[in-house]
Image 1 (cartoon, one colour):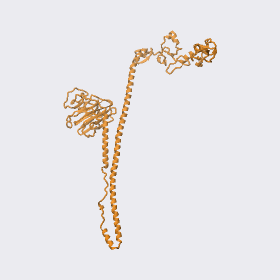
Image 2 (spheres, one colour; image 1 turned 90 degrees about the vertical axis):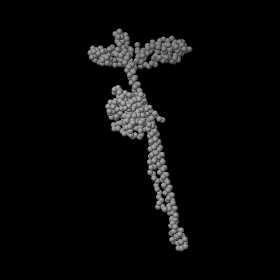
Image 3 (cartoon, one colour; image 1 turned 180 degrees about the vertical axis):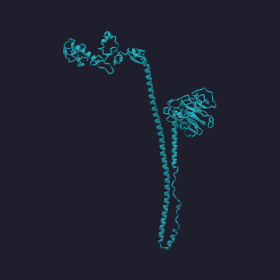
Image 4 (cartoon, one colour; image 1 turned 180 degrees about the horizontal axis):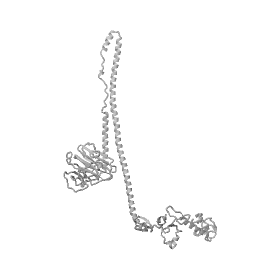
Length: 541
Protein backbone atom coordinates (compact mmCIF):
# COMPACT_ATOMS: atom_id res chain seq x y z
CA UNK A 1 0.00 0.00 0.00
CA UNK A 2 1.24 3.44 -0.85
CA UNK A 3 2.51 5.45 2.07
CA UNK A 4 1.32 8.94 2.85
CA UNK A 5 3.19 11.64 1.00
CA UNK A 6 4.75 13.69 3.77
CA UNK A 7 4.92 16.68 1.48
CA UNK A 8 1.11 16.94 1.50
CA UNK A 9 -0.33 19.52 3.85
CA UNK A 10 -2.95 18.82 6.49
CA UNK A 11 -5.55 20.60 4.30
CA UNK A 12 -5.44 17.66 1.82
CA UNK A 13 -6.81 15.37 4.51
CA UNK A 14 -9.16 17.75 6.32
CA UNK A 15 -12.95 17.59 6.38
CA UNK A 16 -14.46 20.90 5.07
CA UNK A 17 -16.99 20.84 7.93
CA UNK A 18 -14.96 20.00 11.11
CA UNK A 19 -11.59 21.04 9.55
CA UNK A 20 -9.92 18.03 11.21
CA UNK A 21 -8.28 15.01 9.55
CA UNK A 22 -10.93 12.75 7.96
CA UNK A 23 -12.63 10.18 10.13
CA UNK A 24 -14.50 7.53 8.07
CA UNK A 25 -14.48 9.75 4.95
CA UNK A 26 -17.41 9.43 2.52
CA UNK A 27 -17.91 10.91 -0.97
CA UNK A 28 -21.04 12.72 -2.21
CA UNK A 29 -22.35 12.33 -5.77
CA UNK A 30 -20.77 15.67 -6.66
CA UNK A 31 -17.32 14.26 -5.72
CA UNK A 32 -16.63 16.09 -2.43
CA UNK A 33 -15.44 14.26 0.69
CA UNK A 34 -16.61 14.63 4.32
CA UNK A 35 -16.48 12.76 7.61
CA UNK A 36 -19.50 10.47 7.70
CA UNK A 37 -20.58 11.96 11.07
CA UNK A 38 -20.15 15.55 9.85
CA UNK A 39 -22.17 15.26 6.60
CA UNK A 40 -24.87 13.15 8.29
CA UNK A 41 -25.35 15.76 11.01
CA UNK A 42 -25.30 18.53 8.40
CA UNK A 43 -28.12 16.94 6.32
CA UNK A 44 -30.13 16.14 9.45
CA UNK A 45 -30.41 19.88 10.06
CA UNK A 46 -31.34 20.82 6.45
CA UNK A 47 -34.71 20.86 4.66
CA UNK A 48 -33.10 20.22 1.28
CA UNK A 49 -30.05 18.01 0.74
CA UNK A 50 -27.15 19.90 -0.79
CA UNK A 51 -23.35 19.78 -0.85
CA UNK A 52 -21.78 22.10 1.82
CA UNK A 53 -18.94 22.86 -0.63
CA UNK A 54 -20.54 23.46 -4.08
CA UNK A 55 -24.17 23.81 -2.91
CA UNK A 56 -25.35 21.20 -5.46
CA UNK A 57 -28.90 20.12 -4.52
CA UNK A 58 -29.89 16.46 -4.43
CA UNK A 59 -33.51 15.45 -4.89
CA UNK A 60 -33.16 12.57 -2.48
CA UNK A 61 -30.73 11.97 0.34
CA UNK A 62 -27.69 10.28 -1.24
CA UNK A 63 -26.48 6.88 -0.12
CA UNK A 64 -22.99 7.39 1.32
CA UNK A 65 -20.17 4.89 1.00
CA UNK A 66 -16.81 5.02 2.78
CA UNK A 67 -13.98 6.18 0.53
CA UNK A 68 -11.57 3.36 1.33
CA UNK A 69 -8.48 4.87 -0.33
CA UNK A 70 -8.95 8.24 1.29
CA UNK A 71 -9.65 6.56 4.64
CA UNK A 72 -6.33 4.67 4.50
CA UNK A 73 -4.40 7.76 3.42
CA UNK A 74 -5.99 9.82 6.22
CA UNK A 75 -5.08 7.11 8.74
CA UNK A 76 -1.46 7.11 7.54
CA UNK A 77 -1.39 10.90 7.63
CA UNK A 78 -2.74 10.88 11.22
CA UNK A 79 0.04 8.47 12.20
CA UNK A 80 2.55 10.72 10.41
CA UNK A 81 1.36 13.68 12.49
CA UNK A 82 1.80 11.75 15.74
CA UNK A 83 5.33 10.79 14.72
CA UNK A 84 6.05 14.33 13.60
CA UNK A 85 5.23 15.58 17.09
CA UNK A 86 8.10 13.44 18.43
CA UNK A 87 10.63 14.51 15.81
CA UNK A 88 11.63 17.82 17.39
CA UNK A 89 14.18 17.25 20.15
CA UNK A 90 14.15 20.38 22.27
CA UNK A 91 17.18 21.76 24.15
CA UNK A 92 17.82 19.62 27.20
CA UNK A 93 15.92 16.61 25.81
CA UNK A 94 17.58 13.28 24.98
CA UNK A 95 17.46 11.96 21.37
CA UNK A 96 16.96 8.30 20.49
CA UNK A 97 20.33 6.57 19.88
CA UNK A 98 18.80 4.03 17.46
CA UNK A 99 17.01 6.38 15.06
CA UNK A 100 18.81 7.10 11.81
CA UNK A 101 18.38 10.36 9.98
CA UNK A 102 15.97 12.53 11.95
CA UNK A 103 16.23 11.63 15.61
CA UNK A 104 13.06 11.06 17.64
CA UNK A 105 12.83 12.08 21.26
CA UNK A 106 13.89 9.34 23.68
CA UNK A 107 11.30 8.19 26.21
CA UNK A 108 13.54 5.80 28.21
CA UNK A 109 17.21 4.98 28.71
CA UNK A 110 18.49 1.45 29.41
CA UNK A 111 21.23 1.22 32.04
CA UNK A 112 22.21 -2.22 30.74
CA UNK A 113 22.38 -1.42 27.04
CA UNK A 114 23.54 2.16 27.78
CA UNK A 115 21.24 3.31 24.97
CA UNK A 116 18.32 5.74 24.90
CA UNK A 117 15.18 4.69 22.99
CA UNK A 118 12.20 6.45 21.40
CA UNK A 119 8.78 4.85 21.83
CA UNK A 120 9.12 2.81 18.65
CA UNK A 121 12.59 1.38 19.36
CA UNK A 122 11.73 0.78 23.00
CA UNK A 123 9.15 -1.83 21.95
CA UNK A 124 11.53 -4.89 22.18
CA UNK A 125 12.30 -4.00 25.83
CA UNK A 126 8.59 -4.21 26.57
CA UNK A 127 8.08 -7.48 24.71
CA UNK A 128 11.22 -9.67 24.88
CA UNK A 129 11.55 -11.50 28.21
CA UNK A 130 15.34 -11.02 28.52
CA UNK A 131 15.13 -7.32 27.67
CA UNK A 132 12.29 -6.81 30.14
CA UNK A 133 14.81 -7.45 32.93
CA UNK A 134 16.89 -4.47 31.86
CA UNK A 135 16.72 -1.42 34.09
CA UNK A 136 14.90 1.40 32.34
CA UNK A 137 15.07 4.98 33.63
CA UNK A 138 13.97 8.39 32.47
CA UNK A 139 15.95 9.54 29.42
CA UNK A 140 19.58 10.33 30.28
CA UNK A 141 22.23 11.96 28.15
CA UNK A 142 25.89 10.83 27.97
CA UNK A 143 25.25 7.29 29.20
CA UNK A 144 28.92 6.51 28.47
CA UNK A 145 29.77 8.54 31.60
CA UNK A 146 28.02 5.83 33.61
CA UNK A 147 30.69 3.34 32.59
CA UNK A 148 33.91 2.84 34.57
CA UNK A 149 36.75 4.14 32.40
CA UNK A 150 39.12 1.55 33.80
CA UNK A 151 37.01 -1.62 33.73
CA UNK A 152 34.30 -0.70 31.19
CA UNK A 153 31.61 -1.79 33.61
CA UNK A 154 28.55 0.05 34.92
CA UNK A 155 29.15 2.44 37.81
CA UNK A 156 26.61 1.05 40.25
CA UNK A 157 28.37 1.35 43.64
CA UNK A 158 29.59 4.21 45.82
CA UNK A 159 32.89 4.27 47.75
CA UNK A 160 32.26 5.98 51.07
CA UNK A 161 35.98 6.40 51.76
CA UNK A 162 36.89 8.33 48.63
CA UNK A 163 33.33 9.54 47.94
CA UNK A 164 33.33 8.39 44.28
CA UNK A 165 31.17 6.11 42.13
CA UNK A 166 32.78 2.73 41.31
CA UNK A 167 31.99 -0.48 39.44
CA UNK A 168 32.06 -4.02 40.80
CA UNK A 169 35.61 -4.56 39.53
CA UNK A 170 36.80 -1.46 41.42
CA UNK A 171 35.73 -3.08 44.71
CA UNK A 172 38.06 -5.99 43.95
CA UNK A 173 41.07 -3.79 43.14
CA UNK A 174 41.67 -0.15 44.10
CA UNK A 175 38.74 0.04 46.54
CA UNK A 176 39.06 -3.47 47.94
CA UNK A 177 39.28 -2.40 51.59
CA UNK A 178 36.87 0.53 51.30
CA UNK A 179 33.25 0.38 52.42
CA UNK A 180 30.97 0.54 49.38
CA UNK A 181 27.19 0.73 49.08
CA UNK A 182 24.72 0.67 46.17
CA UNK A 183 24.21 4.01 44.45
CA UNK A 184 20.56 4.05 45.52
CA UNK A 185 21.49 3.70 49.19
CA UNK A 186 24.01 6.56 49.02
CA UNK A 187 21.56 8.56 46.93
CA UNK A 188 18.99 8.29 49.74
CA UNK A 189 21.62 9.39 52.30
CA UNK A 190 22.72 12.34 50.21
CA UNK A 191 19.11 13.22 49.39
CA UNK A 192 18.36 13.41 53.10
CA UNK A 193 21.28 15.83 53.44
CA UNK A 194 19.89 18.11 50.74
CA UNK A 195 17.42 19.62 53.18
CA UNK A 196 20.24 20.68 55.49
CA UNK A 197 22.31 21.95 52.56
CA UNK A 198 19.34 23.87 51.21
CA UNK A 199 18.70 25.37 54.66
CA UNK A 200 22.36 26.39 54.90
CA UNK A 201 22.27 27.90 51.42
CA UNK A 202 19.07 29.77 52.21
CA UNK A 203 20.63 31.04 55.43
CA UNK A 204 23.68 32.22 53.49
CA UNK A 205 21.38 33.92 51.00
CA UNK A 206 19.47 35.62 53.82
CA UNK A 207 22.72 36.70 55.48
CA UNK A 208 23.87 38.26 52.23
CA UNK A 209 20.52 39.95 51.69
CA UNK A 210 20.80 41.35 55.21
CA UNK A 211 24.34 42.51 54.40
CA UNK A 212 23.07 44.18 51.21
CA UNK A 213 20.37 45.94 53.23
CA UNK A 214 22.97 46.93 55.82
CA UNK A 215 25.21 48.38 53.10
CA UNK A 216 22.29 50.20 51.48
CA UNK A 217 21.22 51.54 54.88
CA UNK A 218 24.75 52.79 55.52
CA UNK A 219 24.83 54.47 52.12
CA UNK A 220 21.44 56.04 52.81
CA UNK A 221 22.56 57.19 56.27
CA UNK A 222 25.77 58.51 54.75
CA UNK A 223 23.74 60.42 52.19
CA UNK A 224 21.54 61.86 54.95
CA UNK A 225 24.64 62.85 56.94
CA UNK A 226 26.15 64.43 53.83
CA UNK A 227 22.94 66.32 53.03
CA UNK A 228 22.69 67.52 56.63
CA UNK A 229 26.35 68.57 56.67
CA UNK A 230 25.91 70.47 53.41
CA UNK A 231 22.71 72.11 54.68
CA UNK A 232 24.38 73.16 57.94
CA UNK A 233 27.45 74.38 56.08
CA UNK A 234 25.42 76.32 53.54
CA UNK A 235 23.38 77.87 56.34
CA UNK A 236 26.48 79.01 58.23
CA UNK A 237 28.35 80.19 55.15
CA UNK A 238 25.28 81.99 53.85
CA UNK A 239 24.89 83.76 57.20
CA UNK A 240 28.58 84.68 57.15
CA UNK A 241 28.38 85.97 53.58
CA UNK A 242 25.36 88.07 54.51
CA UNK A 243 27.20 89.44 57.52
CA UNK A 244 30.34 90.08 55.47
CA UNK A 245 28.24 91.97 52.95
CA UNK A 246 26.63 93.89 55.81
CA UNK A 247 30.03 94.66 57.35
CA UNK A 248 31.29 95.73 53.95
CA UNK A 249 28.31 98.06 53.48
CA UNK A 250 28.70 99.49 56.99
CA UNK A 251 32.45 99.97 56.49
CA UNK A 252 31.84 101.66 53.17
CA UNK A 253 29.11 103.87 54.63
CA UNK A 254 31.16 104.83 57.72
CA UNK A 255 34.28 105.72 55.72
CA UNK A 256 32.25 107.58 53.12
CA UNK A 257 30.37 109.58 55.75
CA UNK A 258 33.61 110.55 57.48
CA UNK A 259 35.17 111.52 54.17
CA UNK A 260 32.03 113.42 53.17
CA UNK A 261 32.13 115.37 56.44
CA UNK A 262 35.75 116.29 55.76
CA UNK A 263 34.91 117.38 52.23
CA UNK A 264 32.00 119.49 53.51
CA UNK A 265 34.25 121.17 56.09
CA UNK A 266 36.87 121.87 53.42
CA UNK A 267 34.23 123.30 51.08
CA UNK A 268 33.06 125.71 53.82
CA UNK A 269 36.59 126.90 54.55
CA UNK A 270 37.38 127.30 50.88
CA UNK A 271 34.21 129.32 50.34
CA UNK A 272 35.07 131.56 53.30
CA UNK A 273 38.61 132.08 52.00
CA UNK A 274 37.31 132.80 48.51
CA UNK A 275 34.97 135.47 49.97
CA UNK A 276 37.90 137.11 51.78
CA UNK A 277 39.94 136.99 48.57
CA UNK A 278 37.05 138.65 46.81
CA UNK A 279 36.93 141.42 49.44
CA UNK A 280 40.70 141.85 49.35
CA UNK A 281 40.67 141.96 45.56
CA UNK A 282 38.05 144.67 45.73
CA UNK A 283 40.20 146.57 48.28
CA UNK A 284 43.24 146.17 46.03
CA UNK A 285 41.31 147.74 43.13
CA UNK A 286 40.33 150.67 45.37
CA UNK A 287 43.95 151.21 46.38
CA UNK A 288 45.10 151.17 42.77
CA UNK A 289 42.42 153.68 41.76
CA UNK A 290 43.20 155.92 44.72
CA UNK A 291 46.91 155.94 43.79
CA UNK A 292 46.06 157.58 40.48
CA UNK A 293 43.82 160.38 41.79
CA UNK A 294 45.12 163.96 42.15
CA UNK A 295 42.11 165.15 44.09
CA UNK A 296 43.67 165.83 47.46
CA UNK A 297 40.35 166.00 49.31
CA UNK A 298 39.01 162.74 47.83
CA UNK A 299 42.32 160.97 48.44
CA UNK A 300 42.46 161.90 52.08
CA UNK A 301 38.81 161.12 52.73
CA UNK A 302 39.10 157.70 51.02
CA UNK A 303 42.52 156.78 52.43
CA UNK A 304 41.13 156.61 55.95
CA UNK A 305 38.72 153.82 54.95
CA UNK A 306 41.48 151.89 53.14
CA UNK A 307 43.98 152.31 55.87
CA UNK A 308 42.17 150.06 58.40
CA UNK A 309 42.53 146.31 57.48
CA UNK A 310 39.28 144.42 56.69
CA UNK A 311 37.89 141.93 59.26
CA UNK A 312 39.58 138.67 58.14
CA UNK A 313 40.40 135.35 59.87
CA UNK A 314 43.91 134.33 60.84
CA UNK A 315 44.28 131.34 58.50
CA UNK A 316 47.64 130.28 59.89
CA UNK A 317 45.92 128.27 62.62
CA UNK A 318 43.17 126.88 60.40
CA UNK A 319 43.62 123.42 58.79
CA UNK A 320 41.51 120.54 57.45
CA UNK A 321 42.17 117.40 59.48
CA UNK A 322 41.43 114.13 57.61
CA UNK A 323 39.28 111.68 59.69
CA UNK A 324 40.94 108.77 61.42
CA UNK A 325 39.92 105.33 60.12
CA UNK A 326 41.90 103.47 62.76
CA UNK A 327 39.72 100.70 64.28
CA UNK A 328 36.97 100.99 61.68
CA UNK A 329 37.90 97.75 59.91
CA UNK A 330 38.73 96.07 63.24
CA UNK A 331 35.26 96.85 64.59
CA UNK A 332 33.76 95.29 61.44
CA UNK A 333 35.96 92.22 61.85
CA UNK A 334 35.03 92.00 65.53
CA UNK A 335 31.37 91.91 64.54
CA UNK A 336 32.16 89.26 61.93
CA UNK A 337 34.05 87.21 64.53
CA UNK A 338 31.09 87.49 66.89
CA UNK A 339 28.78 86.24 64.16
CA UNK A 340 31.19 83.44 63.27
CA UNK A 341 31.37 82.37 66.92
CA UNK A 342 27.58 82.37 67.12
CA UNK A 343 27.29 80.20 64.02
CA UNK A 344 30.10 77.94 65.18
CA UNK A 345 28.30 77.48 68.48
CA UNK A 346 25.20 76.43 66.55
CA UNK A 347 27.28 73.96 64.55
CA UNK A 348 28.97 72.53 67.63
CA UNK A 349 25.60 72.18 69.30
CA UNK A 350 24.20 70.40 66.22
CA UNK A 351 27.26 68.12 66.03
CA UNK A 352 26.96 67.16 69.70
CA UNK A 353 23.25 66.44 69.30
CA UNK A 354 24.02 64.17 66.35
CA UNK A 355 26.53 62.05 68.25
CA UNK A 356 24.37 61.98 71.38
CA UNK A 357 21.80 60.02 69.38
CA UNK A 358 24.18 57.04 69.58
CA UNK A 359 24.03 56.93 73.39
CA UNK A 360 24.58 53.49 74.92
CA UNK A 361 23.74 52.36 78.43
CA UNK A 362 26.94 51.09 80.05
CA UNK A 363 27.82 50.00 83.59
CA UNK A 364 31.21 49.49 85.19
CA UNK A 365 32.51 45.94 85.51
CA UNK A 366 33.73 45.18 89.08
CA UNK A 367 35.76 42.22 87.75
CA UNK A 368 38.04 44.70 85.92
CA UNK A 369 38.33 47.36 88.67
CA UNK A 370 41.64 47.90 90.47
CA UNK A 371 41.41 46.67 94.12
CA UNK A 372 41.57 50.25 95.43
CA UNK A 373 38.61 51.44 93.38
CA UNK A 374 35.12 51.62 94.83
CA UNK A 375 32.11 51.18 92.51
CA UNK A 376 28.51 52.12 93.23
CA UNK A 377 25.90 49.36 93.34
CA UNK A 378 24.37 50.47 90.04
CA UNK A 379 27.80 50.40 88.38
CA UNK A 380 27.57 54.06 87.33
CA UNK A 381 30.13 55.67 89.72
CA UNK A 382 33.74 55.05 90.66
CA UNK A 383 36.23 56.72 93.02
CA UNK A 384 39.49 55.93 94.75
CA UNK A 385 38.71 54.08 97.98
CA UNK A 386 42.31 54.39 99.30
CA UNK A 387 42.09 50.85 100.73
CA UNK A 388 43.24 47.77 98.86
CA UNK A 389 40.38 45.27 98.94
CA UNK A 390 40.99 41.53 99.08
CA UNK A 391 39.56 40.38 95.77
CA UNK A 392 39.76 37.05 93.92
CA UNK A 393 42.46 36.76 91.29
CA UNK A 394 40.91 37.60 87.95
CA UNK A 395 42.73 37.85 84.59
CA UNK A 396 40.42 40.71 83.63
CA UNK A 397 41.36 42.88 86.65
CA UNK A 398 43.78 45.84 86.51
CA UNK A 399 46.40 45.47 89.22
CA UNK A 400 48.97 48.15 88.42
CA UNK A 401 46.81 51.23 87.74
CA UNK A 402 43.44 52.38 89.06
CA UNK A 403 41.53 51.58 85.89
CA UNK A 404 38.11 50.10 85.27
CA UNK A 405 36.23 49.03 82.14
CA UNK A 406 32.54 48.64 81.49
CA UNK A 407 30.71 45.33 81.21
CA UNK A 408 29.63 46.23 77.70
CA UNK A 409 31.93 46.14 74.67
CA UNK A 410 31.43 47.30 71.09
CA UNK A 411 32.87 45.87 67.89
CA UNK A 412 30.91 47.67 65.18
CA UNK A 413 28.96 50.79 64.28
CA UNK A 414 28.78 53.87 66.55
CA UNK A 415 28.37 54.48 70.26
CA UNK A 416 28.46 57.43 72.67
CA UNK A 417 28.59 57.86 76.44
CA UNK A 418 29.10 60.72 78.91
CA UNK A 419 31.11 60.84 82.13
CA UNK A 420 30.73 63.53 84.80
CA UNK A 421 34.13 64.73 86.10
CA UNK A 422 32.91 67.74 88.07
CA UNK A 423 35.09 68.85 91.04
CA UNK A 424 37.92 66.49 90.07
CA UNK A 425 41.51 67.66 89.64
CA UNK A 426 42.64 64.67 87.56
CA UNK A 427 41.07 61.88 85.52
CA UNK A 428 41.38 59.67 82.44
CA UNK A 429 38.48 58.78 80.13
CA UNK A 430 38.14 57.12 76.73
CA UNK A 431 38.06 53.62 75.25
CA UNK A 432 40.44 50.64 75.32
CA UNK A 433 40.63 47.44 73.33
CA UNK A 434 39.98 44.08 74.93
CA UNK A 435 43.55 42.76 74.73
CA UNK A 436 45.30 45.55 76.71
CA UNK A 437 47.83 44.48 79.33
CA UNK A 438 46.01 44.71 82.67
CA UNK A 439 48.82 43.61 84.95
CA UNK A 440 51.84 45.72 84.00
CA UNK A 441 52.51 49.39 83.48
CA UNK A 442 52.44 50.41 79.84
CA UNK A 443 52.26 53.50 77.65
CA UNK A 444 48.69 54.73 77.17
CA UNK A 445 48.73 55.12 73.40
CA UNK A 446 46.62 53.87 70.48
CA UNK A 447 49.46 51.48 69.63
CA UNK A 448 49.01 49.75 73.02
CA UNK A 449 45.21 49.85 72.78
CA UNK A 450 44.21 53.12 74.52
CA UNK A 451 42.35 56.10 73.04
CA UNK A 452 42.00 58.39 76.07
CA UNK A 453 42.36 61.98 77.25
CA UNK A 454 44.01 62.89 80.55
CA UNK A 455 43.05 65.94 82.62
CA UNK A 456 45.06 67.48 85.40
CA UNK A 457 44.80 70.90 86.97
CA UNK A 458 45.35 73.45 84.18
CA UNK A 459 46.15 70.77 81.58
CA UNK A 460 44.41 68.49 79.06
CA UNK A 461 46.23 65.90 76.94
CA UNK A 462 45.37 63.22 74.39
CA UNK A 463 47.73 60.39 75.28
CA UNK A 464 48.99 59.59 71.80
CA UNK A 465 52.48 58.96 70.52
CA UNK A 466 53.44 61.76 70.69
CA UNK A 467 50.89 63.17 73.11
CA UNK A 468 48.76 66.12 72.00
CA UNK A 469 48.32 69.01 74.41
CA UNK A 470 44.79 70.36 74.05
CA UNK A 471 43.43 73.87 74.70
CA UNK A 472 41.62 74.21 78.01
CA UNK A 473 39.04 77.03 78.04
CA UNK A 474 37.54 76.32 81.43
CA UNK A 475 37.26 73.51 83.93
CA UNK A 476 35.48 70.58 82.29
CA UNK A 477 32.45 69.19 84.13
CA UNK A 478 31.27 66.45 81.78
CA UNK A 479 33.06 64.61 78.97
CA UNK A 480 31.32 63.01 75.99
CA UNK A 481 33.05 60.16 74.12
CA UNK A 482 31.92 59.19 70.61
CA UNK A 483 33.28 56.21 68.66
CA UNK A 484 32.62 55.29 65.03
CA UNK A 485 34.11 51.79 64.99
CA UNK A 486 33.80 51.24 61.25
CA UNK A 487 35.13 54.72 60.40
CA UNK A 488 38.04 54.44 62.86
CA UNK A 489 37.13 57.61 64.79
CA UNK A 490 37.25 58.53 68.49
CA UNK A 491 36.01 62.02 69.46
CA UNK A 492 35.86 63.83 72.80
CA UNK A 493 33.48 66.66 73.76
CA UNK A 494 33.10 69.18 76.56
CA UNK A 495 29.38 68.56 77.07
CA UNK A 496 28.53 71.61 79.18
CA UNK A 497 30.40 74.01 76.89
CA UNK A 498 29.17 71.99 73.88
CA UNK A 499 32.68 72.15 72.43
CA UNK A 500 34.55 69.53 70.44
CA UNK A 501 37.82 68.81 72.29
CA UNK A 502 39.71 66.40 70.04
CA UNK A 503 39.28 63.61 67.47
CA UNK A 504 41.61 60.68 66.82
CA UNK A 505 41.08 59.74 63.16
CA UNK A 506 42.31 56.91 60.97
CA UNK A 507 42.20 54.46 63.89
CA UNK A 508 42.28 50.72 63.19
CA UNK A 509 39.99 48.58 65.32
CA UNK A 510 40.13 44.80 65.06
CA UNK A 511 38.69 43.71 68.40
CA UNK A 512 36.01 44.81 70.90
CA UNK A 513 36.34 48.26 72.51
CA UNK A 514 35.38 49.02 76.13
CA UNK A 515 34.61 52.41 77.69
CA UNK A 516 37.52 53.20 80.04
CA UNK A 517 37.61 55.29 83.28
CA UNK A 518 40.38 56.21 85.72
CA UNK A 519 39.53 58.53 88.68
CA UNK A 520 43.25 58.87 89.73
CA UNK A 521 44.40 59.19 93.34
CA UNK A 522 42.29 61.15 95.83
CA UNK A 523 45.12 63.60 96.52
CA UNK A 524 46.39 63.97 92.95
CA UNK A 525 46.90 67.71 92.18
CA UNK A 526 44.74 68.59 95.17
CA UNK A 527 41.47 67.21 96.48
CA UNK A 528 40.44 64.64 93.87
CA UNK A 529 38.00 62.53 95.88
CA UNK A 530 34.89 63.33 93.77
CA UNK A 531 33.59 60.29 91.86
CA UNK A 532 33.49 59.84 88.11
CA UNK A 533 29.86 59.26 87.11
CA UNK A 534 28.52 57.68 83.93
CA UNK A 535 25.63 60.05 83.24
CA UNK A 536 22.56 59.73 81.03
CA UNK A 537 22.56 62.03 78.04
CA UNK A 538 20.52 65.20 78.52
CA UNK A 539 19.87 66.61 75.07
CA UNK A 540 18.84 70.24 75.15
CA UNK A 541 16.53 71.64 72.53
